[in-house]
Image (cartoon, rainbow, N blue to C red; front, side, top):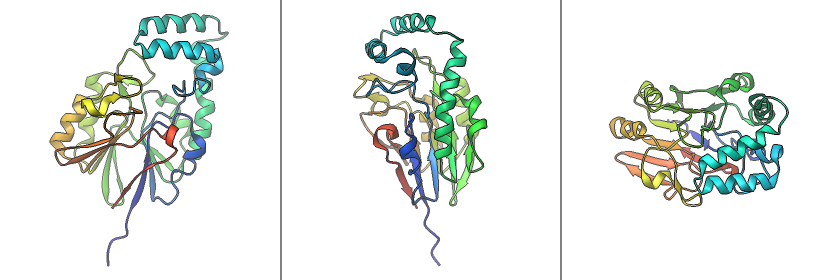
Length: 260
């Protein structure tokens, strides 16, 4: 008797799209989420996200303009001026807004879901919202349909200073802990120019050299990631490994499909 086929849907960069997330697992044996659930600021629609809710659309236009021009110091100074006018502790205000998004997004996850963190996520909160059907993994492995999936969440440090950025050594240690797997799932891509360059933002995002080295060394069947919303290349082979940017789910509302 032939083995039963397995179908896994993979999403990344959900950024507040709870409506489509609720349907992302339809027809699949499992959903894999590669992080960035939070929507702080939508670069395509500056009226959406925590930032415009707090400071208005015009200020959102300005912060996007500064960041796109890579004027990060000016952007931080502008942001600090805006926060000075907000009553309450900055961390508490952001956490309250993130909690509202997490309550809706985690409720939309189907069973089973296997998820890891993106660079804009707040890992400390995930345990409160992940239900029994959602398994959170970071530097860990799990078997799905007879294949071993490894998960490494978060991003590397950048001038953007997003919430879950870690040092290169800590990130490399998580890659090492995962070891040899069939499918290597990360939020950020390996450090390959075609995979890290965003054609709309017109800049190179940070990829991981340790991830690239692990792909070459351990030769997983697939390396799946997101993070770069409009990459120069959405997929390419590195040796025996098919590297795939699974897409900007917030914009497309469609999961990437893996079947075997």
